Image (cartoon, rainbow, N blue to C red):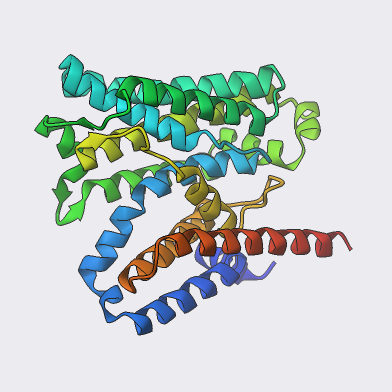
Length: 320
């Protein structure tokens, strides 16, 4: 093996050269189109705006690495956020218990998904589609169809404080990204996730508790979504029934654009982070250029389709 490939940075660039080049070209195009893009304030705003997507994408990465998916993440974010706002505003619960309730709600949804998928053998798409519908319905019921305003400054500070000039939301996202990287690259749990995505039957024959390790990632996904719901409602100082709507699209886009195979077993946190930046640059650039927000969805869909086609072509070539 070439000595250069033993260096983590070189190996990372080699694996993700296509998406890195794509990101650089995108930054150049947007910078030429709007000079405001490369200002420090806009870059910090870009990172802040995409921090929640980064947290959710870390969870989505775990699901897709197993060759599965979780389309309930958006509704889980909404349910956690609406319950947090409700507890603070309508019940008068202190901030700390409310934080744990938000995380607990997310974890509970993850447990339901994990049990249904791993132990009851419900296909991941069907199971998470069901919890997506349940979560969105509960969000409507709890909110009563109206926006819940939060005036508790201790709660809103969770999403609006700055540390050394950097938004605390960016710090949350950085911690989750580092944690997910460590989990996948430095623990047996991460090794098993890749093994399950490669071949569940082979993993089982190797002594892996497939049901257990297929379920646990969904609990983590739920926790990440619970944290995201808490952050988002705190940042906005309110929570509406539409909170988290469409978040699953951005998370899937970031993971797939970042080079993770939809069939499982291949993908990295670093690649996902590049995918998050690509999504963020597209959204931010189109906003700065005053282009209709509906076009953002069109571009995201095209990019996802292109990324999946590239993955399919790459796999077919490797088999030849």
